[in-house]
Length: 114
Image 1 (cartoon, rainbow, N blue to C red):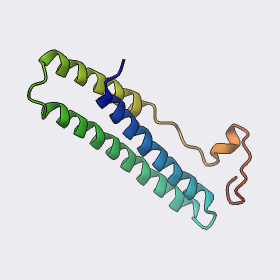
Image 2: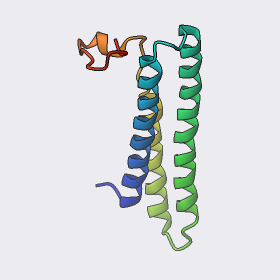
Image 3: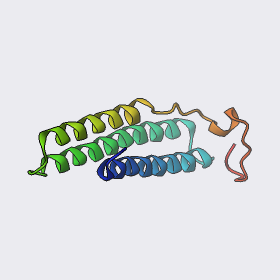
Image 4: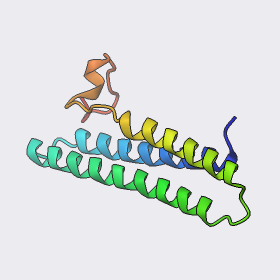
């Protein structure tokens, strides 16, 4: 069972990922963006996404540290849970393709998307 704090951290991570994927869709869907600029934008988004995830985890660790009456066993369990979440979210970065929908056979209703 997850603690409410860990669920909040994971929820924040999911919300940030969704926001970045929406930005990726906008970039990929705009045919006026040249391919080299598109790739640069994706690289920048990747770096910003990792930084945002790191910030969320740092804030969560700071919240644990800022709780003075937390027993050491609970503190250790919280850190272990955060470390597991960090590994899950940082190592499972999906690989982006130029045409993400074409790989799975999804046709877009949006005329600018492939």
